[in-house]
Length: 242
Length: 230
Image (tube, rainbow over all chains, first blue to last red; front, side, top):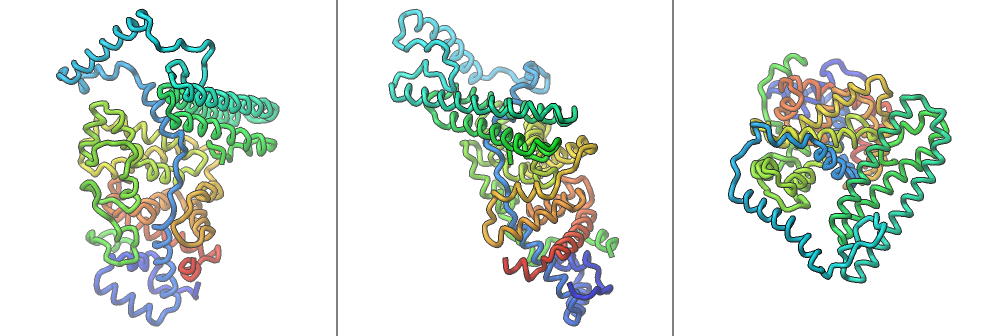
């Protein structure tokens, strides 16, 4: 920076850069800047600052953010729709929708009773997406691979949790509480993503989101294990393991 | 001089240096910045018009809810990162969107949807900071780290990271106004609505914030010449 100049404060020069000064003030700043290195430099700095600030990037939110928002919204009080403000007379569309739901509720069990050709769910299938509705053998195979990958993620998480438990004893109650809070959020994301994957068997998008959620938790735990040796250091980590 | 600035009538900026402001484009009947125009390409099929989108969400259309999320997710998350730091940004963004969706029944359209969403996001971030007041505040390094993966469109990533670091060291009031105006490209009228202050206050806070930021950058050896060569 050039030597200090008391004629115009930097704030005023910033207003000049934004074109907020009156015509007289603008002319005064221009005339002064023509002979003042300090103010010329300040104006150039401010302009460069504004241009570069407008070009700063926006970080992409973690892929599990939407799942956690949906989860929180779904946990809202179930009876809130009964409030007077939300009350609407039934429309024809709503009645038609209700009728369709009722039809499915009664018709589907009847189909199963009459010997539907849909295969029975495999025992103990707690996998990512249910293979029970899969008819295509390729789909079955893909779902089995998804389930295997999910199990591998779970094993990695269990190992990291075991490693971290040794460190946790050294943390303050506040640090332990913060860690529990973060892990609960990550678990919530995993649960939501698993549910999404279960609802859309054969759709890889649901499983990709689930794996992203697992990876997020693994990265967070791995970083916590790595840095957690110094009590409290983990608290400086991002919730998604940055 | 600040008092004179605060008392001045509101005029639209005329200098071409205000890159983001000058590039404002009309999308869906709203004046939105270039980032908003990009995000308007929501992944989920839903009404393009904000009013129709809000109506669809009120009727319980889950697809429209998700479309609104995709339309605003980057702006809300980036705002959260810059106000509270990367550690708590996800939590704040989640809280902001929950407030947005629960509050949509009360949204009367007195302000633009984007402005209203920004207000809820800023409130969520500032109340989060208040709740965490006793804990350590976010460190500049976290913010820089958060942006390491967000590759800037052009220029030197290291210099941008240093700009982020300086931004993160600003007092939160200055930081909020500079993020809304210079980074997000909002007009002073919108910033004033979001922060619940007068337009003159928004302007004077911005100019003070820039002056402080310039001092910080200069201390870090960054000047116009450095930034222009980035």
